[in-house]
Image 1 (cartoon, rainbow, N blue to C red):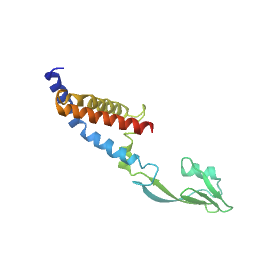
Image 2: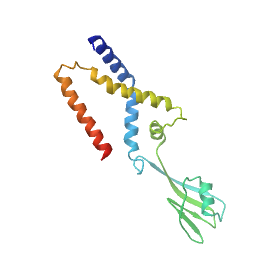
Image 3: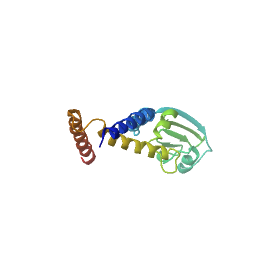
Image 4: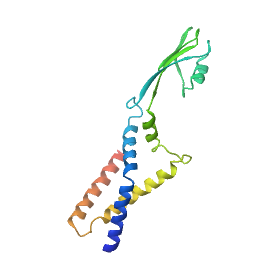
Length: 169
């Protein structure tokens, strides 16, 4: 592999890196916040009071409040209790707390969750292919005969071993 090819690959690596800097920051931030998706970290709580029809069943309350996976935790003759709220049967008053990710953070996190039907689908493929190019092109940054390349190969091997250990342990 000649110096001309090496310089060309380095140039593509450099400019693609600059081009993708913004989206890499978005993926980094959203990826970190997605680690905490099963907790209330980064989420905001909103207290909601709604008037529903009196004397609804637990299933009807869930449908009226549009709460996915609604499940009553307890039911008495006057009250239905569910996660984060209650429904008074006699008055039809429902009081509950809605816990959700703020709008901007939710939009950022959708980058990671895009499926084939989403408009972000092609962006995710482009980004994944670009990251794969970064991996491969990194090996053209230095000539193989230089000490820094040899040291880089040791770091690459160590990184691969660490990834495999984390993946299979």
